[in-house]
Image (cartoon, rainbow, N blue to C red):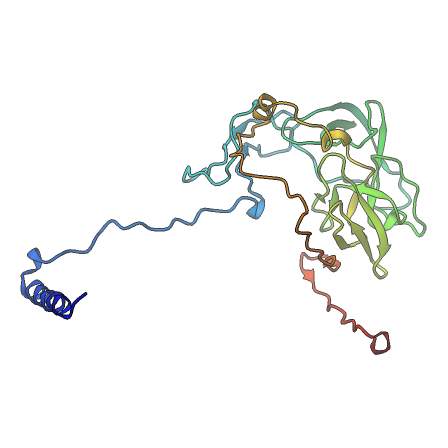
Length: 307
């Protein structure tokens, strides 16, 4: 670009600005009123939201199947798509699970006994559901691996001096179970109901004690939690063990499950470039009142003489 052309552009721009500023407001160039703004969408999985369905719960617990509104991955307020790949599927009713296993706390009393009336498959969850009853009370719980109609399951909230020998499906505090017991539906805080380990075929393991009133439970992801020994847990592995190893089989079956087609851009990693080996996370210590107790991480040196 020559100097003459550059000078002409600069002078012309100055003349245009002079006339634009001196002109009346109605003749001046107005800024754009409708500009594009970034809308921050909510993230799936935050605060327990999956954007798959809304269950219309009732005021009191009931074993009556509840009505469900499928969201197809959309936000119920704005209608925007939040989670892709969700939509369609067979409509299912929701069976309300009673997460709290209540029973006597006095060691002199016998455990509360309940009879398994029915074990069936629920379309809104992966593991099977069992209908149990005691007296005039009926409720749904997650069925264990070998649970069948006619079984008697027991629940007790007392912690004896010596560990007990429970059967599959029984519910006891973590402090009453021996080390090495397989558990599911473990409470994170005492009295708030089963919070950990709900998927089909999964089970946690009580691996050690952590002081006089805490137990360490290893969940299926190999993460370790230090929980209070009064947290209730169900003994055994959850039902429908073959769920994770059974192929879907066809695209039509995948649509029946409520999954939309993928883009086809995902490719399995071959391992050519290796993988990142990360150290296991430290034990997460959870308090009784809901706070998370942070532990100082130990520092280890390379030379054994400095440790």
